Image 1 (cartoon, rainbow, N blue to C red):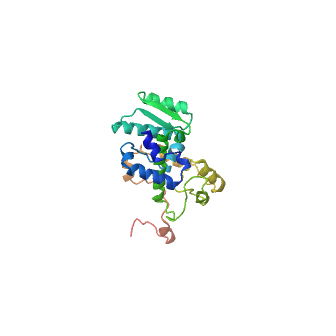
Image 2: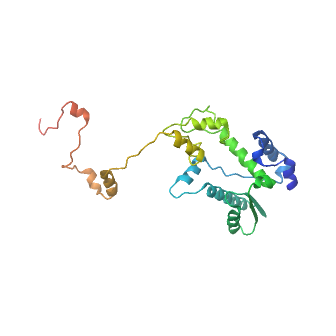
Image 3: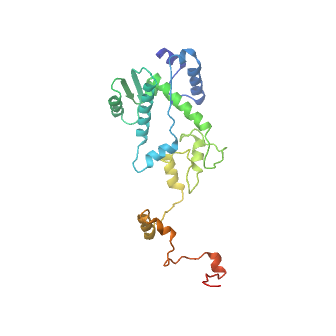
Length: 249
């Protein structure tokens, strides 16, 4: 298996160009010597899902989202009948804690969690290439639900990319970024803090809060009986024409 990885030229995916990653990915899926030895799977997590996880009341950090995804992928491999002996993971957070967590869940596997594992272990490099190529393909076919110009250029999505920098600088000053951008990303949140308009939402008044408190406790018959004490404001159409109710004609 190691010879197959070496023959395909796996290396740290961050050091490879997009074209090189695409080439290695294609070879991995086309060459018989590769398809007989290597299988892969990814879980796609949208920026919107990550933002909701990180910004909701009961927050989940990006590290937790990543760990849960990795654990889920291992479970899926087991369910698919893969005979797993060893697991190699590029860490998020302290590697010792992450490794201990995985060991508790999967005690029968030899588990290695390390920093920069994609530059140390070819199998992790292979996984990283699969993830990055999948991400690149998802970006190429992204459809903006907000009505954003489909021809807009947003680059690679990495903060060092000049095209991405320009895209992040041209956001809506009220509504912020489209769903393509993770609002929980510090680069995005800092841009909003600097340039976005301040928007204040008034608290509900006491009458609204009282109405909410009693909602669901009224008798159904209330909605079918006229309230004689109710002083409703008549529609502007009737007021402008001085039209009144009469008892007799």
